[in-house]
Image (cartoon, rainbow, N blue to C red):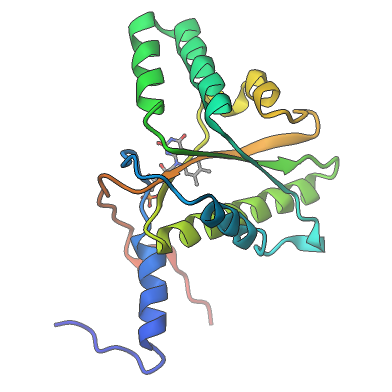
Length: 194
Ligand SMILES: Cc1cc2nc3c(=O)[nH]c(=O)nc-3n(C[C@H](O)[C@H](O)[C@H](O)COP(=O)(O)O)c2cc1C
């Protein structure tokens, strides 16, 4: 039998939780264009993430067609260097189907604790962004694959890798297929202490 709804659970709260739980990493996208203003608003909302000392350590690089083409050439080269031409062409093709590209970086810090906190803040910002997009029906994928650690990506995006490192390359667009996911029961991950 379904658990009765707790008294605090309003319609708004249920819908909010549904956005959080329902967001999925999307691999396959429709070609429907995404309004540019919407993406800017999502990035602006992302910057309201908690960040210790209000360092605002995030930087966002929104890629246009020309930059995406350069990334596709780069991923082709990376796969070719490690595997073969067929695999490289396949990857280039599958990545060319990703409609929106946003690179998120974090400012480097000499202080190890600050660096950790800044990375945490950037991850919170990315989640803000993904949830904002999801609420508007737009799916995304956060990737941290080899391209994100390749110095040639820094050159393409135009940041100094000595000053910033990649938190994630975010693809986004209207989902073609939304996969299923599961999570462990809460009691496996929660310890309630006296
Ligand atoms: C920091 C980070 C890096 C990720 N990098 C990759 C990646 O390189 N490739 C990939 O397929 N998924 C990547 N993901 C997405 C996860 O695979 C995905 O979140 C996980 O499968 C759970 O699915 P869900 O997002 O639909 O809940 C990454 C997620 C995070 C938070």
